[in-house]
Length: 101
Image 1: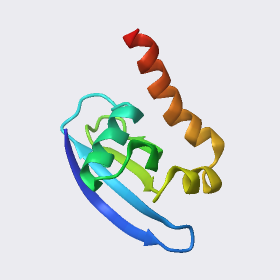
Image 2 (image 1 turned 30 degrees about the horizontal axis):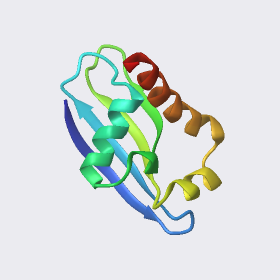
Image 3 (image 1 turned 30 degrees about the vertical axis):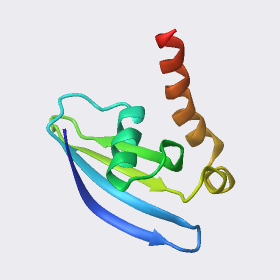
Image 4 (image 1 turned 120 degrees about the horizontal axis):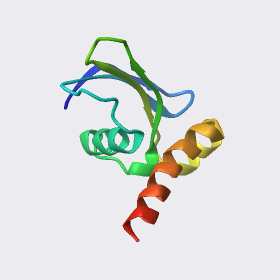
C-alpha cells in the first residue's frame, strides 16, 4: 500500500493541517484505524491527533483518496471536529482492544 500526498495545507484559523492522500496498490478499502496509523507515522504525530474525514473509492479502480486532518493536540480536535468523526476513530480502537482480550 503506497501513500502519496496530493495536498498538504496548513489552516491557521482552525489550527490544523489538512491533507488529501492517494493510496494505491490495495484491492480493498483500508480501515480507518490503518489509515490513521499510517498518517500518524508519516507525519510523526500521535494517533489521537489524526482525524480521517472521508475515504473515497471509485468502482473499478484500485486507488483510494483520503481526506484527513492533523491537530496539534486531541483537545483542539474535540473542540473543532464533529463528534461522529471522533467517535468513528475511537470505535476502531475500542473494537481492537476487545478483540485482543
